[in-house]
Amino acid sequence: MTDRIMTLHPQGKSGVNIDRGKYDAMRQAILDAVQDHGEITFKELTEDVRLRLGRKFGGSINWYVTTVKLDLEARGVIERIPGSSPQRLRLATST
Image 1 (cartoon, rainbow, N blue to C red):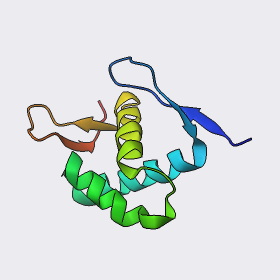
Image 2: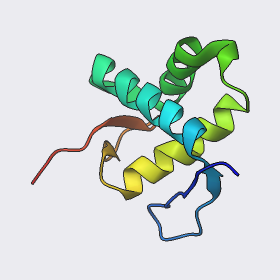
Image 3: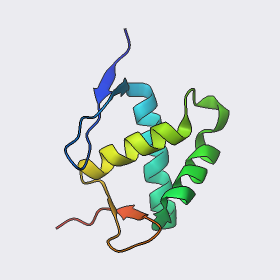
């Protein structure tokens, strides 16, 4: 049996139970991309993560980017930049 994690959603909706290894790989790729760019659009994030993980990641990169991004928002690790269109992300500022 594999280790799993229940993701969170920033609007309090139900999360999903995913494989811990895939979560950790996706989390690191997202954080690396956001840190490298400072601010990044969701589309750029998805493309960057695809380049970082490529074929070695088993599963839908788009789905995992969306799921883990929402989880990181809910945990206060990254944040959407208010008023940005298209949606832009950055590391959350500590208060």
